[in-house]
Length: 193
Image 1 (spheres, rainbow, N blue to C red):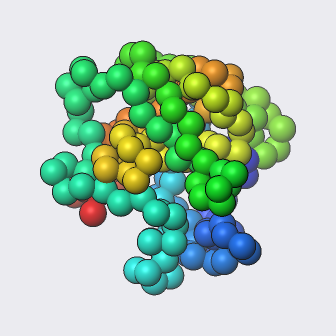
Image 2 (image 1 turned 60 degrees about the vertical axis):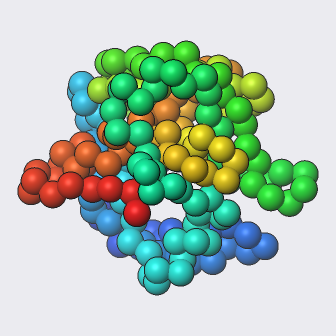
C-alpha cells in the first residue's frame, strides 16, 4: 500500500503467487492500516483469496501449529533468540530464500521513512515493532515477508516491513491480528487459522 496512492480502493490490483509464472490468487480489500504520518500508523493490508486452495500456494510451504500459531503478546518474545524472514526470493535450491535474524528487542513508537507512490517521503510511526540483526542481506522487495520460528513456519512472529539491510524491523503478529489497527472496530477477534 505504501507504493500506491493510499486513498485508492485497489479495484484494479490483483494478488499473485510467485512460481514459474505469476498467477492470480486474489484481490486486495479496503481493510488496511493508515500511513498518515501520525503515531499508530500501520503498514499492512488484507486481501481476499479467490479460492481456499490459493492459501497453500501463497504460503509456499509454510504451515503453522495450532498451539498457538502466532505470538499473542510481548511476553512471547522474552526468551526468543531469533527468527527467519521467509522472503519471496528463490534460493539456490529452487525453494524459498530464508534469512536468519538475531532478535534484539521490542521497539515502541518506531519511526521510519516511506517513499509513497507519488514520490512523497513520509515519516511513519508504528506503535511497536520487533528489531533484530539480519545474518544476510534483506532488500526492499522483501517487505511483507512473514517472520517465522522455523523454515517450515511453526509459529508466526510477524511481518517484515523494512530495515537498512542489516537491521530488520517486523510488525509483531499480535499487532497484525488486532482489527482496530486496520480501522475495524466491530469487536471481532482475528486468529491465524
